[in-house]
Image (cartoon, rainbow, N blue to C red; front, side, top):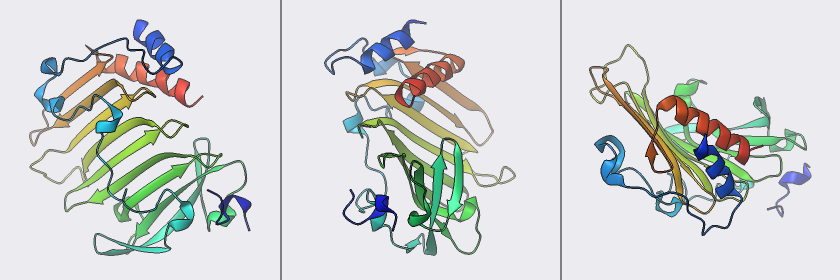
Length: 237
């Protein structure tokens, strides 16, 4: 038996962000004025990680990989547990947790009948790193027209690092009165304070809004992406 799964195992903004992540939690280098934030996201922004709502399924004991049942009913579909081995950016399906090699991470999710594809993917998706620390979890909800994904990523300390929500129409040829997509992304310092966020939404006429903020200031999307990459490199070296 794999010992890992025995039942008893349990620019300035960049520099300032990097300094924050290694300094005392009391240090603050910026402030937020949400009155200046567009209506698109004003009511969705969380100034602190403890304001982020729980994900669907957070009331289930899914933080323990051994607690995942082989079968689960999700959206009235019977779904089967799937295990993937995670080695860097490479993911490989394996038969069970016992087949995950030492020194690699792993991910658990469910695939639902009748199709073995993204449309059949529902419910919880959890990923652990090679040390067995839960670093990401998200929940897939499928309605008639679109897929809805809500998730979080953690620091290795298990504190919240990123919160995200995305909705996409299942087929680009379909009409959805809500529009073809929308997404919202937030990043937090390890002390819980909001670092930055971005959001975009397209309406039914495919006209879209895109906004991005970092450390209390509006930035363009390319700068946001650059700052985000630098932050990821620091958090997950």
